[in-house]
Amino acid sequence: MPVTVVVGTQWGDEGKAKVIDLLAGSHSHVVRYQGGHNAGHTVVVGDQRYALQLVPSGVLYETVVPVIGNGVVVDLPTLFAEIDTLESRGVSCKRLRISTLAHLIFPWHQRQDAMSEALRGDAKLGTTLKGIGPAYADKVKRIGVRAGEVRDRERFRVAVKDRATQENALFASLGEPLMDVDAVVAQYDEYAQRLLAYLDDTVNMLHGALERGANILLEGAQATFLDIDHGTYPFVTSSNPTAGGACAGSGIGPRDISRVVGIAKAYTTRVGAGPFPTELHGELGDRIVDIGHEFGTVTGRRRRPGWLDLVMLRHAVRVNSLTDIALTKLDVLDDFDTIRVCVGYQLAGRELQGFPDDAETLARVECVYVDIPGWKQSLRACRREADLPREVLSLLSLVEQHTKVPVSVVGVGPERDDVVLRGANS
Ligand code: GDP
Ligand code: IMO
Ligand code: MG
Image (tube, rainbow, N blue to C red):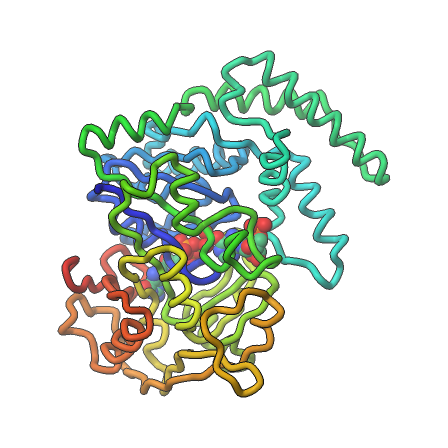
């Protein structure tokens, strides 16, 4: 079974892209399966730093076919800007394939995202304002426009015109400024002509590759606790980043999947609103943000910091069938005297069983912590398990004991080689 899924286990930005880049070399295809340009995926190779939003992280390997799967919502201006930037830096995107079934994001989706956030006032979700939620809403309402529609130029122009006109009627009723429908149609007609070169029936393409013995990597964006079903609703994104979403968003069934790698930071961060049991306010949190450069790749927002939460991680193991965990950014904690790890939740003095099923309860839990002495040395040069200080090994044991899943990758710095591989992967 030749398919590996990479999934975030917290609230995003766990370092998924770096692990995907690490694994991509032994795969023929890397497939993004959900989300859109709300994602910000950073890969560092030598002195080059690549910030990707839509193009799969495998693009940096010439041997890899990067695929934007059917579950993704595609913003064409962002896509083409990203392709142009990559190509200007010598990274060819000619191999990129985009599913005909993927839905497109349009300017009205971004407007709706901003309007619904404004309407929420203080109860804002803190979305990326990229139009992700409204685009998925249109998909579910069955009024979305799919990438494959551009193959019939006239039909696509009519579809965009009809949708823009309908959305303008809504904007008019709300007293909002109107879009210039003809300008939108003309602009998207141009994008559509460029999109044609990348379009493919990616589901059949991937199955053809599997039949020829290919290894495929399915790249998740966002994370388990931003999942529309399993996340801290309503403070979530509008897709399924969890491993089940990898099947729906790529067209590859569960029996082809042999490995599901969960990516977890050695601490936790969250961008946007919502409950966060281990959140750190004050100086300790500021240190994590400073040392870990915890500012959003897409929006530049400061990420909220907190300790590692093994109740969350255990839940992520369950809902994703994780086979192993990559624990990233341990080096960020190099100088801390004590590292705290949450191993349980209590509510009114009573231990909770499992992860609470609503955001209100999660906001009220108290964390039970285990303290681990800091290692107080740089991990950056560590490459083998034997190089890791014993305090790090006890942290890894604690994670494995609570999750019952091995930690196969340890991140010790941002660069491609800054990892320690453990067990069968070493
Ligand atoms: P993603 O959205 O999950 O792909 O993660 P992001 O790219 O948004 O954020 C992770 C950040 O941490 C990026 O800037 C990475 O270069 C960086 N990073 C990844 N792994 C490590 C690590 O082990 N140590 C350090 N110091 N940085 C890391
Ligand atoms: P990667 O793939 C971190 C968060 C937003 C907001 C919520 C909903 O880089 O890990 P949306 O625009 O999706 O409707 O916003 O989800 N969010 C992310 N947070 N990393 C991401 O992606 C995110 N994508 C969305 O901040 O709280
Ligand atoms: Mg990110």
